[in-house]
Amino acid sequence: MGAMIRGASLRGFARLVTELGGDPEEFLDRFAIPAAALTSEEGLVPIDAHDLMLDAVARDLDCPDFGLRLADTQDVSILGRLALAIQASSTPAEALDCASRFLFVHSPALRVGVEPDPRGRREVVALTYRKDLRDSPYSPQATELGLGVFHRVAAALAGGLRGLRSVELPHQPLSPVARYTGFFGADVKFGCPTAALRVERRLLDEEFEGADETIRKLALDYLASHHTDPEELVSTHVRRTLAGSIGANPASLAQVARLLALHPRTLQRRLAAESTTFAEILEDVRRDLALRYLTTTDLPLGQVAAMSGFADQSGLSHAVRRWRGTSPSEVRRRVRPRVRGRRPH
Image (cartoon, rainbow, N blue to C red; front, side, top):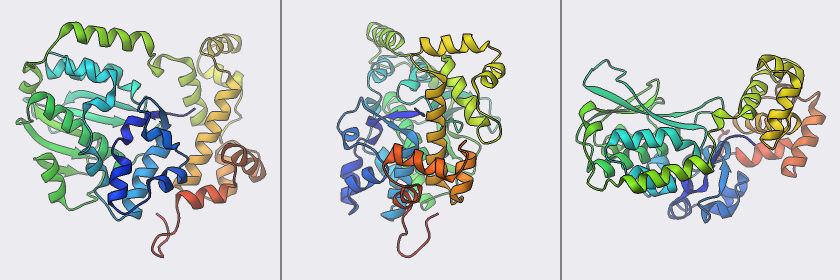
């Protein structure tokens, strides 16, 4: 399957949508997200569907700051056991190291890190929040949710972000700029290369009162023993190789093995050790690409079929009925309905 995200990311979703006059179940059904995702925080949902749903709610309920509103209802506990390691850390630098190493448990498509200040100030660093666009398209609402939660967690751990210089977002403002400055308590810049919090470097070394090395070590040991970083898996590299070549080149085991500098039998054995096969990954990639093109573009169905690796539109239709129990056109209509007489965008 494609990149996933823990259902805990939707904490507060149902209540907020209801308060805005919407029907949470209708949105979940539209994006094929099980209702259990809202009650089982260990459950996983496709990050494509998760992000598309946030953008749709903001559009359909006329709530451009939906991501920020949802962030206001969440805290570090949405990260599960990773939250224990973060809260038990002795400094912000140590907490960020935990998060950067194990955020893949929350979603393998997301990463946080500490990078040099993009504006060249030596006394400032950028706490970056990134989504791997190889795994899922960019989503403005999901980015605002993620950076908003990142800010709330950092402020809670540090007793406030007094050294926050500015906030950077890749997209243009969705709401009045005052909404952003009010939320973050700092200047917000738009159209930037990366979502980030620019903070004074000295903040990274401030000590937390609640540090507990024993709890931190236990939490990290648990995460290391129960979860494998997808970047270390051969199946991840096969998936990305296929995603980058489907539609342009024939998808074959021999070709992918050559691109990964492996013998085809060696690749088969390594995939078997990860409890999957080349055929299963190919099916997943075709499904992810086809559904992504259907739900995020207006491309003709024949073009969607070709770009997803199907011989013709009929092959796409049969596959979509197998995956979703309906036609490609209906999948597109459900996700991107006409609203207030306007064409979806």
